[in-house]
Amino acid sequence: MGVAIRDLISDYKTSVDWADLRGTAAVDGNNALYQFLTTIRQPDGTPLMDREGRVTSHLSGIFFRITTFLENNIKPVFIFDGAPPEFKSETLEQRRERKAVAETAYRQAVEVGDTVSAFRHARAATRVDETIIAGTKELLGYMGIPCIDAMSEGEAQAAYMAMNGDVRYSISQDYDSLLFGAPRLVRNLTVSRKRKVRGRVITVNPEEILLSDLLDGKGITREELIEIGILVGTDFNSGVKGVGAKTALKIVKSGKFYETFEENEPEFDPAPVKEFFLNPPVSKGYSLSWSHVDREGVVSYLCGRHDFSEDRVNSVLERIGVKSGQKTLDSWF
DNA sequence: CTGTGGGA
DNA sequence: TCCCACAGG
Image (tube, rainbow, N blue to C red; front, side, top):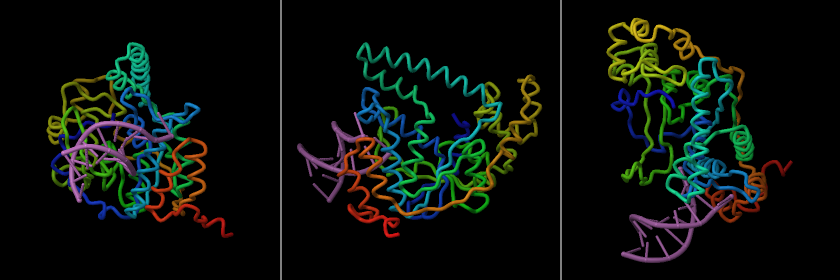
């Protein structure tokens, strides 16, 4: 999952206020959905579902998250993954296998009535499929939020759009964005509150990483950051055994990137992966346009189709000035 | 994850 | 008023 360069980045992440995040933002859609689907569950692992048994956890997450964004004058555009590169297939196959194992373990835990491990396995079995994406796009449409299908990796598309000046920053939990060149990465953009992480209670705050700060601070180029990522392992390669971020930095600084692979992983050619991070396939013909929230659309989709409480949906919409019974702009024409 | 309601 | 535990679909 992503690239393990946290140790490198820890000195360069700074906390940010919502007020400093006004404006346009490219959201890693698959990443957000995965987060919602893994966390929004009952204690026994069951996700939220409508009366027909369709999963709705992600719709809940998207709805509340987007409302908070709009309240804070953030204009998000959601980016979804396109076709993965050929060299990602190994990772994807491994994930499929793990999900299948987790799925079985989940069913067994439910049978035995072990809710704690049921929850854990249900999380591990989480997949973002086409149905989930389609539902998300439909809801985002009613909320007036644009969506873009990336040609390949969503984070690459987001980085491209940020470098182009079309969005001010990227939102993702993964650090891959930085390898793709995202100038400003924002993590933990959620309403701050205390959370239990591995038994400990901590407060999670929004944080940002400026690529230039990281590169200047470590005295490296983006190309070298990519090399570091490839040494520790990415979604596209497994990295060199025993090499973490700190060691990778030393290797790269001493110019021994290719040499290290030749010695340890002679079968693997890192050049195509490096090229992929440097010049990923992206869609250049996108257009961004935000529109008003279509209250009737949101309510009929969430409440009519997916059994959300109308009172709850309405009271949240009122926070962003969309009043119950208010005509949508379209209905005036 | 996030909003809410009830207890301190 | 603040905090926490719980429900949401």
